[in-house]
Image (cartoon, rainbow, N blue to C red; front, side, top):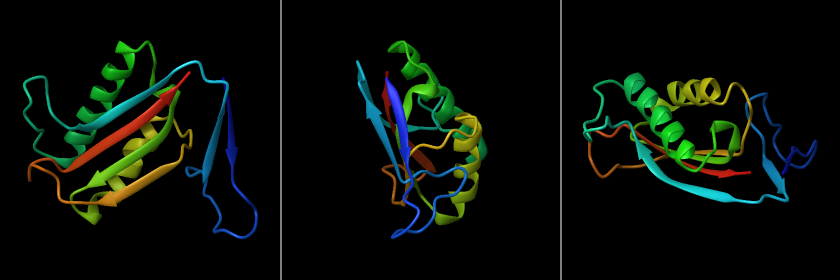
Length: 128
């Protein structure tokens, strides 16, 4: 599989170091679509703080991807659903840390989650 980022130099706003407009995935052998994942522990209980929920989310994503013999290095697309726009910065920091600075096409949406205790929900697409 080959990953080719696309960041046009004109006609669209510039990409930053941790943002890419598009990712071309050439010759993937598998795609895995991970459902929206919340900051819940093994018993389905949400963590109390935003940072703790983000930690659980990324641990949960790692566990789900491992079941498919993949890692966060296989993520090629990510969408975050934030209960409040003030969560955007912490969410971005957690993403950059989890992906070790590797940019992937990312969207963050402010939405009402199904449970008020779910502060963030993240879904990813992975390929290999």
